[in-house]
Image 1 (cartoon, rainbow, N blue to C red):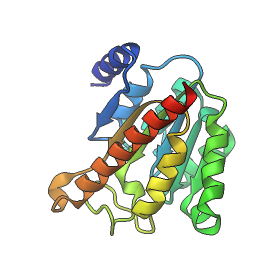
Image 2 (spheres, helix red, strand yellow):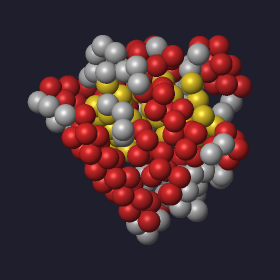
Image 3 (tube, one colour):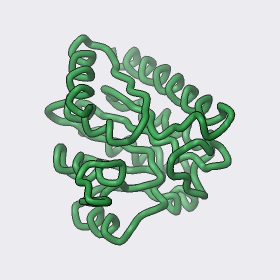
Length: 211
């Protein structure tokens, strides 16, 4: 599965198009990131670090995939926004490896415009930015149909404002993952579709402004 995603994303991107992947389990991000070479940064909107080295005997899973991404592109080239659930192993790895993250605690205490500026500063040095959106970054009251819901998440308004800042960077591909439509009556899917739509609009706007 990971190899298939890598090949398809590589083909779409090499044709000058914007790959958009809709998932699905978050491990798919690992395959998509492998399609991009060179000076690549990654921004993740996620309630979780997903930085464990191993989970339930697996080296590659939804709880470990970001650790594998770190091995691919380097932890210093990754920014995780909205994180609010982690184990000690993940926190220690993030701090010791120079991986950057903005927790929900940070988001509560700082102005959103300051957070947006911090994200933009991170992206400035990259030729390409991969954006991954785990729907559990949103509060369960907004998006309940996810595999691992975590209370105290982003509102839709906060998410869209952050998305606008991210998409001012050189976003080369994006995915939206961990939505589970059977778990509600469509509200999470509507939120996912809205985020994809807004991301496309902002990315196109930014491309036109740069050209």
